[in-house]
Length: 200
Image (cartoon, rainbow, N blue to C red; front, side, top):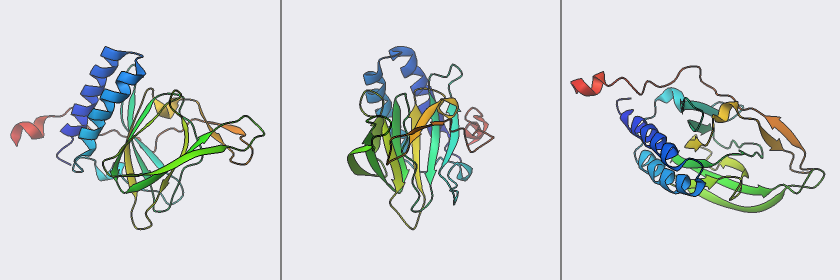
C-alpha cells in the first residue's frame, strides 16, 4: 500500500493526545474519535496482510503500540458471520469500521452465577465510530453482519491491548475467564520509511 502515511498521521496524532490529556478519558475519546474518523474515511492504506480473515476465529493485528504502553492500534477482522465471545477491555477503546457492517451487542455483568444482562444492540457500518470503556460500558459482543465479506475495524485502546489481562464471560452464568488476546501478526507495517513519498 502506498498510503500508509494515513496510519502514521493517526499514530502521531494519538501520541500527541495521550501526552496532552493523560488520563482525561473524555477528551481522549472525543478527540481520538475525530482522528479515527479521519483515518477510516479512506480505505486505501491498510495492507492486505492486516485485513486477512481466519475461518475459526477473529483476528487482531497489531498496527502500532506506543512504546510506553499508553495506547495501541489494531485492525480487527471478522470473517463472514463470525463473532467474538462476550468480553471486556478494562481500558478506553475507540472502534472505527473500515469495511463491512458489525453488530454490537452490549452486556452488563451481574456477578458470577447470574446470566449476562443484554443492555442494547446496534449496527455499525463503514465510517462509524464506537466507544467503549469501563466508564461508559465495557462489555460486548462484536458480530459480522455480512455473509459475503469480512468486516474490518480499526481499534485504538488505552493500553497494549494484546498483553492486557481481560475477561470473557459465559452468557448463561456470567462466569469470567481470563483473556490475554495477543496478536495475530509477527511483523508490523513500516510507518516510518518516507522514501517512497519522497520520490513520488
